[in-house]
Structures are given as C-alpha cells and as structure tokens.
Image 1: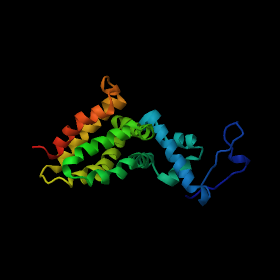
Image 2 (image 1 turned 30 degrees about the horizontal axis):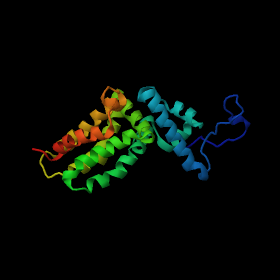
Image 3 (image 1 turned 180 degrees about the vertical axis):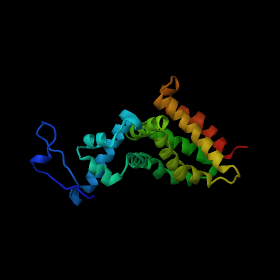
Image 4 (image 1 turned 45 degrees about the horizontal axis):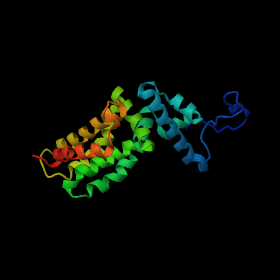
Length: 215
C-alpha cells in the first residue's frame, strides 16, 4: 500500500506503557499471525459493540496494529465483517458436507444437531453471537450474512431436495433453527434458555425435517 512503511523504532511507539504498536506491513513471516490477530480483534469488537459502533481504527487498536494494516489485509469495514463471518461459519461449512451426505430423511436431525452443537460450544458461540447481533441491527451486516448463508449453506441443502419449492423449504428449515438460536442464546428466554440440548433436538429435528421433506 503506497505511503505505508514499517517502523519499529522509538517513533512508532504507542501508549505510555513502554510497549510499541507496530506500524505498516509486518515481515512475511509474521503475516499469517498478524492477519489472525486482526480477525480475532474484529470478532471481539463486533461482538461487544455491534457493526454500527465498530470502527477499523478500533479493530486496529484492539489488535495492536496500525489501521493501515487492517485495510491492507481486509479492505473496508464491511470486508472485515465478511471475513469475520466466514471465519465464524467455518465449523458450519466444515460440517455441512457431513450433514448433506446423509440420506435426506436424516438431514433434519443432523442439521439440528450441528447447529445446536455449535451454539452450545463456547468457542464457536462467541463469534456467532457477534454475527447475529450485528446482522439484526445493521442492514449492511445483514446483507453480508445473507449472502454467505444463501450461497454456502441454503443452496446446497436445497440442491438435495427434489421439489419445485426446494429453496423455500431449505429457508424454512434454517429459519426454524435461527429462531431457536435467537431465543435460547441471544435473548435467553426461559425455559428454553436452560432446557437440555438433547430435549431441544428431539423436539425440533422432526419439525426441521418436515420443512425439508414434508407435504
């Protein structure tokens, strides 16, 4: 990026705690670690502040880098958010093929178990919360979320359904699970928030399956 130089000397100092915040591009050996650090900081910022109140400067400060590096690796705030969404959805996409490889009459349970399992895991829950909260409150964030879910998940599920309304069926199945996640993990309405996950799966999976293959 033109006009950005690396500087590790005394002039590239940060706050008066004696530490220095690195400016400009890092050496290649540090690139992967720097990118991951920025992405982790972005997820934390989006989770804590939502899309509207998160800034590239704030992400950079949290990651301990110059904001030029954030632009270098990701571009705009929207592109940073999209990368954060993709990272948070990586476990979903990794498990997607396992779900879709099942016979169609088992997809409802597998899909329900996969989504509930991701929300139950604290490691995957935190970035998912950041995405959902941002998507609910901001149309730009919602658009990024829709694009990823539609292209990477719903269309693949719809492709397994031999029905003229396959896309609608896949979306209804997803809506069922998103609604459960919102009420249980985001809004935390009782008694659903404290219900046993296996009890939820037993009750919800047949409904999801009905959306996919029912009349």
